[in-house]
Length: 164
Image (cartoon, rainbow, N blue to C red; front, side, top):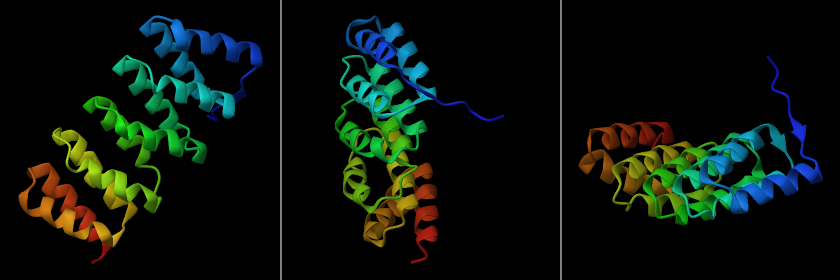
């Protein structure tokens, strides 16, 4: 079944923007997920605005939708979202960025290896492995030896995929 993609009209864009700006949390999340089937810079701009919302749930929803778009224009807002302080949001951001193999991600993802949340670290290890940059070898070796069982597994897999 082919997924239909629609362009957003100016009227709908304004309505969505108002909801994202001042709606209730569940309304905001509903609008964000409704935008998942739409394309265009206006949609990306609305979702990037939602990344600054005070609600962790709204930010996480925006990240999920931006990540599902597989659009290079979402790269910068997603990288910027790696500065979020909420572990659940960070996990979503790293998952969303996992679809990109851009070596510019290596530095920001390496910083995620120092996060206190084991889930964030595990997702970062996996994403770093997807990039396949050998500059991450030392960090991955560290987690292959000293990480929890999941980190060890992911680090060893990433090292194997790098074909060191």
